[in-house]
Length: 227
Image (cartoon, rainbow, N blue to C red; front, top):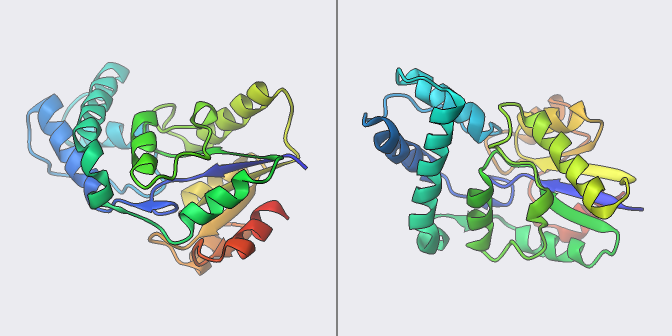
């Protein structure tokens, strides 16, 4: 049974709380030359959605060109912080173990559906040696669309194209109702992990097929994702 597992990153696999705020403030200063006066709600959002809201809230146009300038500034900041990222965040309990365990399963492909830009996604996982078992080429990233369900569609399509076949099961894992809604939109199995700002009850109420307190129980997580 071929299974495509699509992971969220922030507060699902890693926690970089506070870093996003600093990067956004510094990117705004670089692109627009003004101090931060508004911070959008990050959890579950895509970088394109956040950038548009952020620029508009500070009185600037949010055309595709301006958004791309903002993305370039964020990428440069991530590059500057790349070596320090292991000290700026942490890998969440069980993340390394579940990624490694699933990599031993011949018919499992692991990739991402994340609001992050591709480079930021790579750096955030590399910092804690979590990148080895992820296929970054077929991920759905936040630069693509303001709507998270578009990211799920992109990841599924790219995975099918690369592997030359459909998947018997697609599983979307994340810590917010946005993650759950995006997976449900495409009929995937959705798994909520209460390692972010939402409780298990809230994730269940949002429609998650299964909710977990965290990823620390590797056998239980494997059973959840591959059943």
